[in-house]
Length: 374
Image (cartoon, rainbow, N blue to C red; front, side, top):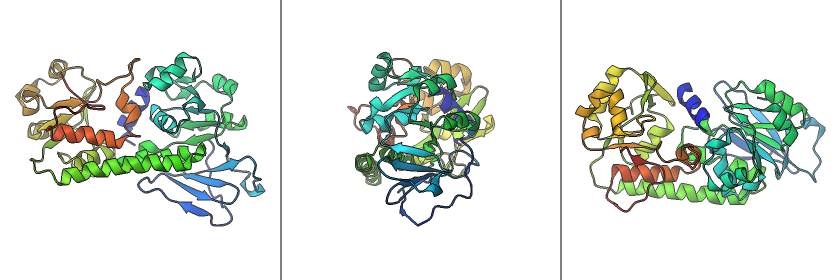
């Protein structure tokens, strides 16, 4: 979703009522993710406890009871939100949440979404046009009246930490809210691993694990191909001008890891930030001339418009050699950027695109997201 992605970018790639100090009796079987840092599941005989960590900068730890309705819950869990599974009606607030629903075969469980024009998936576009997915608000603000009238079993939110007052109203009306922190993961595979959370919510755990294992396998196979490639390693500049400020991904960010895993040298590798970093123009003028490839220069439709904002670019080899690539031109029928919707769930596709940009030996390759800036 466009508003969400801009918000994330400028926060630095950086609620129901806060829950602190709650203890669950018994140890439970802990299911730890392979790559993700933001969630954990504890399995008990009659229920599970989903733990969401680091939902937004400075967030407390959130806990949710996943409850199959035929089982009885102990009174000791009465202060935790209860989510009845399998979920039958869900509202999500970010396009990054949509691919998991589609891959798990539960697209018809989505009943509302804020700012539906940014949805690109043909499956969800058809459901929107048929009136089966309602408009639930604009940007990050949900329409309380619409949500209460729809009575979803669950709201899955991307959170900045400022939604707790509205979520309190939903919780008081038996609509639990869960926070999805995929955007806080620094590992590309960690972002994709959030499909396991959807698997638990929809009682499709086995399918979710199988899907994720396939993504991991494809990702690792591409990394292995990089290790055996004998071509020269390209130097990559990523980031661009937004308004009058330059932003680049930090050297420890998920974007930097994708570049490195695809076999290139990221020019900001020595930086220690995990999110985006504002840099001054002098540093850009020092680093960009070294680049063999420039990724994602901003929302420019072509090189001519980019050159108007940055006249010095004409002297650099990335411009002269046509080595500027962007994902912003690959859009759905209503204008949504497909990368924003699909990339978290498909880091293997992103890695594959980057590999073929860095090592363009296969002239027949069909890109998932990226295009050469015309």
